[in-house]
Length: 65
Image (cartoon, rainbow, N blue to C red):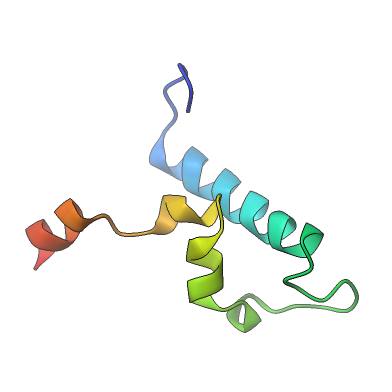
């Protein structure tokens, strides 16, 4: 992140929290009540600017497949 080296767990933990808060701020998620993790659409989460940290890159797909 920037010039600072972060571990994968640091990046994904922060990204997950930031993505959900970003979606809440832009109105993608309900502003009241409890929202379960499984109620957040994966496509919407991965399309978020912070959720992209979870997206599988083409190179990883080719190596795994």
